[in-house]
Image (cartoon, protein in one colour):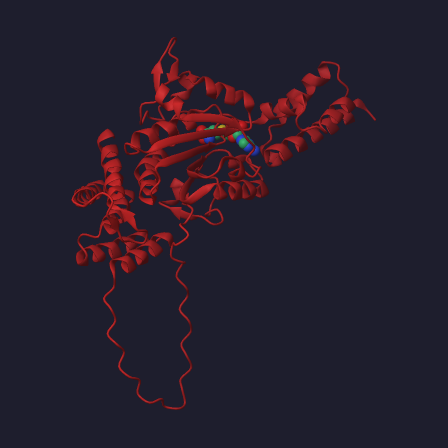
Length: 401
Ligand SMILES: C[S@@+](CC[C@H](N)C(=O)[O-])C[C@H]1O[C@@H](n2cnc3c(N)ncnc32)[C@H](O)[C@@H]1O
């Protein structure tokens, strides 16, 4: 066999190896990167058959070199800032409402760690006192994880497109910055492949960021990775994906907010089922039935029923309809805290900041008048202190911005 044919076989095998290890589709694997690695090995005097044999072992140095060459590590602090604003305004209050006292975040495909530290800084600055935070960053590329653990970055990690939303680093020498101790203290990094069952390894998270990673994956790999990630969310937890990575909610999750936000939530187990289609009308009866006894008067709708109806509308993507239902609810039940909070979050998402703030002030003031441990009935019964903590978190964030 000619050496040229053998080299081509090595290149083809190298691409297969990269695809099976990363989940990348063939067209996302840089031919020049693979070519460079293979040619460098051949130039060192290694034979094509030696390289073929080494590629039987996915953990061998050649496989590592191939992965390092093709994995794209582009990232910077507070990339896509709107998703960090959503984390602060929606995800954290929602976790506090669920009663979470220890918030766990995960940056899946974190590259050199800028995203992981940004999540940690955001969580630390938006949880209420007494709530603790932990953030995990994982990637397939061990070299980038080592860089992440050092926590020292240059200008390329601080771009104008990513505003410094929360304190995260301090200047050191030569224009470089070092991640501050409070943020480092809650952050750790580990090497992980997103094609592996991850919930079993790391437990469950309140929020997962997996951005600009799946964009390189084949459809099968996207489905597998999203399945693992969805299972690693606590019920009620959120996942944020990159802007063009999926065009419909991953299985078992529901979209939250506008499509461009790419935010999805794992529903709570007691979340209402999606509305059923109305059954077809019964055929007319031939035999006239005796007149039915008058129906007992219906009980007036309870705030929880109306709230549940609003939640169904939100899950179905009808946020305007949900807002109307909540407005009607609050006309009747002015002090219903869960409804006030829900409407405030809807107003914020619809861009009506002033209305959201006014409602959040009412939530905080009403909650402050109640004993902190008093349980407030709603779709989820929660103590008054959680309403106060959620409103505090929201209002504090507003004053920071
Ligand atoms: C472009 S970076 C994204 C960094 C960050 N998430 C952001 O959006 O700024 C993509 C990262 O995904 C990692 N990656 C690719 N395939 C992976 C896999 N199968 N398992 C884990 N990480 C993977 C790459 O090593 C790379 O560091």
